Length: 271
Image (cartoon, rainbow, N blue to C red; front, side, top):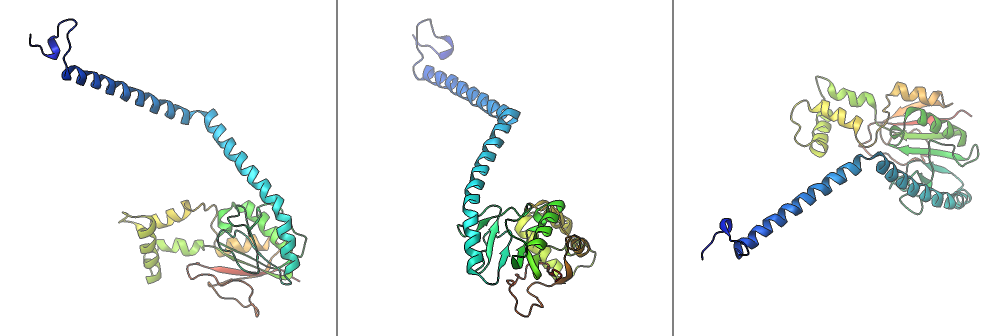
């Protein structure tokens, strides 16, 4: 007797057609299971308990790493201070390790870098360093935290010691929105769009400015007036602004800033 899958008699099998039907049912079941798993994962991601637990575990891992870094810190600091007559401190080293400097960072990436949270009291005595420098770090902390850092820099610098920071200039950034742009401004906008904002065709200066504020963990951008005020209220005097790489130090101890730095500054603490 010839039969189709739709009119099988009780107890009969449709051979390949029946096998195909079973595979379709099996596929539908797997699809439903997959959908259920996706829903479960989506709910877990929304669970405040799961989110809190994940954050707690990440925080625990971070705390354990900090304990290890703290255990090594005093040895590294003592060895540096003993070995160098002219003492120089770099804050926010990242991968920019400098010879002759005590390189520090809140997340040390290298064995020679010492752990230091620059927004808290520094682990140094008063009047310890001749020079302190930092490149593109102050804009990554909130204004109030930066004030703590600057006051600590003033405390650990020797009388007449120098602080040199490189940081973006807010005035230079906002000038990208001007009607008439210089060749340098046009070049920077072209470079920034090509590298970070592919596809942007119109109002490109506005996109570049917004990207600069929102990207790379920036917290607070300074113009010269605001930075001068922050430094002055932290006991710094003789505050001067320089173009990248420039200095009036007769025996410059600061590294030369790269040409991409929009502005650097050098400050003297009063004797």
